[in-house]
Image 1 (spheres, rainbow, N blue to C red):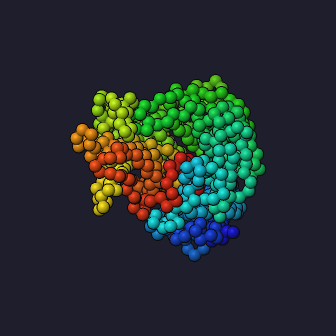
Image 2 (cartoon, rainbow, N blue to C red):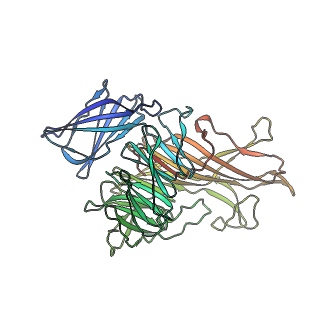
Length: 534
């Protein structure tokens, strides 16, 4: 089922001789096998050394990737790029390796296209960013899954997909479900999943607590700590792996008119010995958490105060008090991930709303048909998303401020289909984020809201109707060029009234072929990627 294409020989260390032989294996299915690669980057990291990256040209079926230091527990990853430096293939050694002096070590690494997966709770959809968005195979849907909620990459050759009450495994060489489902404790409803670094296990957050699941043996160990909304896994200062669960997740404000409230806490569960522990109060409303995979650092997004913060203190001890230390200001901070030496986070710059019957605020209403009293009239400057790449040392972040996304509504009563209204976004919320290998690309799913009140020609005669629209989007951002590499509008739902408006009926404009969903309309709820970091 797999085809070996290249072997790499690396000299390990400058003073001690040693070698690491990499065997890169690819799927045989043409639609899944990387193509067009011209360079290979080998990344090596370990708990005791910073990341080492060596890039070389492919020459036939082999390459030489340079020096790597002698070390133990080294994680080896590979990135394959084409002539335009676009990422076309990714790979990760299933287990950490030891690079030993005076000894050759052979490692087989599965290499795949950098597929991205989104779920709407009913289906799991795929995006192949190596293809032109107009290619029929750019978007697809996987079969054989029972109500998929979240997908995480594990060990390179497997994708773990969580349904409401079970886990299923997909062989990434075939994109087919393999093995039998792994049942979670009776009564548990899945909320989130995170891979356990350097192992074949995942941590599952659910309504009863946190379960540590060994995918190889199907063994499930559960700490019944109560409902957990989000989970992440990382090491302690002593090198022990812990699953950190967020209790009482606060939703980011959906628009400039929405309020943000809540109080969250954090619970820590040992990966090797899951046991019931007490949660620690965080003192703020938290929307997301993420742990570094190679150092004892956990971070959080604080939407109500507009911050990304580091969680200080030891959550693994019962008597510890936790503190939130700001590392960056980010309006309506919603989601985050830790990739390498950076925290990637996304938030929202609020829109400028115009209201009647009072000042705009949390009590302002917007609906079609309109309500009496204080209500929204329209938006003059739309909300837009902000993405930050924040160094772990909390130095100045790199900021990508995306332009606002407007939506066009078409008057279906115009035979020329040229009469339209262009709406500014009232609100946009990043729902989930994944960072692709190498850290250049970030995929984010969002939900946006658009609104404008009706325009009356005379009393009792409406010229333009009230409009309320909700859209879903999948985005692939290129941090190197500070741009949107690809976008798909997955859904556009429009409500308009009254029906007897002079200009009517109305519908969302059909997006271009490059931005159209070809697998149906849906609102995405989670996003993952092969070898990606959530």
